Length: 530
RNA sequence: GGGCUCGUAGCUCAGUCAGGCAGAGCGUCUGGCUUUUAACCAGACGGCCUAGGGUUCAAAUCCCUACGAGCCCGCCA
Image (cartoon, rainbow, N blue to C red; front, side, top):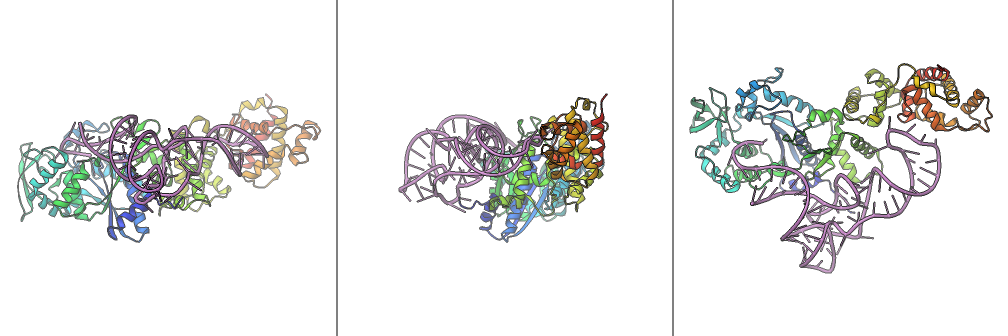
């Protein structure tokens, strides 16, 4: 097999063939909790951007929050009082929680936090600010002048005739504040103003600067031109023939004399067995929810390893562990192909937290420490992991804790019992002898790591070993005929500590607990005879 | 009614851009081993690359058609 080129590098090569200077853009409307499909959009854009930079392009990456779009309806998560705000630009509506300066900011802030989390650092623009600063004024003039041409393009490509009163510019009414109830009556290119009438009965004049917004199908190409966008990913909803990319290409070329950006069409992310994520079916996972359980690198990996035009299936239960394992294995593998390495490299973007603690191991540590961060940190230190970045460990701990709570199957869970479990009464003589001998050795030994514990348990069946000899003495048995099944020994450990017959991999598990606690507990269990 | 994308091992998918012996991980099976909340090591099995046609010395790859799956579009991102 010849060397495989990662899709991001393929895109970068195609784009570079058109020129060296590039602007990768992505945009999302913060009308509600930002959807996971949008995560794919920004990760895709970020990766394309990084690939371009890696190839020596003079590239920039921007994110535009469409804060000037009107609120479409009172979403289920909104109070009924929001009915009065339907039709107003999101940036001009009060925040649902009262803690942000506007409605759009309420949803934008956590999303920007998520971007930071994922190591994605675009220059952020807010559409309302761009309009208010006048960035769109030239495009607005062109659109107003060439209204009929635009209408003709829309009609030709999308097949529907715009209404007589249709206009590419939607003024914001001074009176009711709405943007979707106004009709343009005239404009003045020198004064840079637009006259309108509103269905609320008001009429007036607004400045082109911040007085309204271009309709979506015109806004998009206007933005390409105004900002110089050359690469942009978008969901397949825009990719239909006659869809907004199609009309955007034509409007951009014919009205604004600007070549449309290189398209990257991406597919949706499907959730587990529930199928496509969609707000109408209620199958929705917010980015915040996703980041609660998935380390950011793994989420990037999930998206980066799959070509944009393919569905991604994401299952947050056990398959998540497989995904994390796969990532970690690839990450530390020395026989990864150049293709694998490239995927890891792109997943592990600059500014992203990375610890060397396996997710799976953390599920054990977390439960041993009952979620207490200070104790977790102690255990992690004792296990010899890198603890230089407490922040990274904190993130992993939060992911694991949330995963255990939200998605982990029961058989992945356990809890260390504060008191000796009563089920210890069932232990047989061999198990008791083992526990007391084990405890005695622990008392005398220094710190032990996972492998030490593992080896120590197995030494019980080796004739002549300290543990074997002690057990034989305790039972008054001949070491030569002593039958020791390690399985029973493990069971004794789990029963006395967890009150259940099985548990996490013993080495890791025991080394996560305090040695003195173990010695004490094993002694109690060995002597417990109700 | 139109359109977009996908179809490769039991599962999840690389490989298609740029044609050159059919690939990985997981699962399964076999052997080894110190059984651990999906142990580890070694190996094997596993494919009419959805179907049919075309181009070519050569097709999973390019072209046409059909079928299957998912989704989008009627100015509302």
